[in-house]
Picture (tube, rainbow, N blue to C red):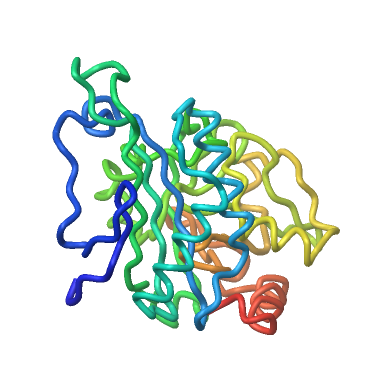
Length: 273
């Protein structure tokens, strides 16, 4: 990072370069912590209420108790936006289990961090030409919680490189999600997205609000080669066409008309790129 923007750490505004955690934190010792991620777009933080809901829902379900209120949280976000002036920056919220005297149980208070850093835009070809995914038989534990456990994504990096994949498609008999995105499928005009074992993404919510005829239902992994279109929806990648999964071509191998329709709807509202 070429600059050191101001970030939030336990009630203080500090330069990014000065924030650190002690080795006794339960995030390090036990992987106990949650996070969230959202962006400013041309100076506006879209859907902040939805992201705030998700942060505090993750805290509640994780039984991480913090004195931070919703009002304080949104106030800090706006303060960081004003101080750093990153019109297209990203906010990464991290709440850890806190420092532990035993290195295994909760004995201290959570550490609450909010990083405000530049957002690296994916290449234009991501949206124009589409991307590939790898696949893996796996369901994330507690998928409704946005945890910091990306172990199964990080360890599959060689597989992802093999297929030039930008993410991993998780599934059992049914498809659930990508590791960093929700997934949508088009087959003979029927558009669907998985119902269960997913993180309920904020971008997914916007797609469903704009296109209420999309079916929320089980999507079988055996149907993969029958789909005409696949696309992913996420904060970091917006609406991205998927043209292949582990070498299996989706449709004719190019972004399809419904995916383009969703992209256009997002662009018209200033929600994309």
